[in-house]
Length: 141
Image 1: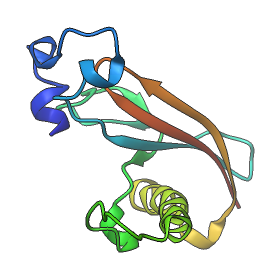
Image 2: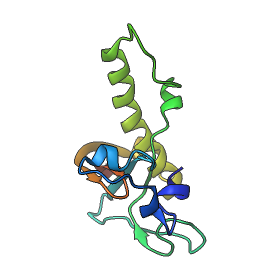
Image 3: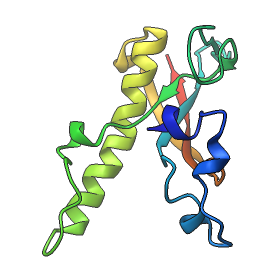
């Protein structure tokens, strides 16, 4: 898990000596995170402060976000063979936007209908420890 590997104080012991980042991080979690910059109708940006009782960035100010849930899109495994990759790609793309909507609604309490536009701002990868983050711009009424 991310907490068990990447947030472990001895996380570097999980790395494999290699120049190749994929090989180097093969024993660490590689979660996909999402975050949203939410702009209100009066042109303000929302920030949240994390609890001091969490493992990741306790007490820090953050944008609403979390992680997509593949099982919510019906993806429960890595199928081999004649899988319709276009269909899977569509489901993954839809879950990326659905998940950021869920996170914003859950974390700041706005109705989903008030989120009127989304734009993918950035795809950012932190190699060590491994993390891929997708950032979105959301406009709220």
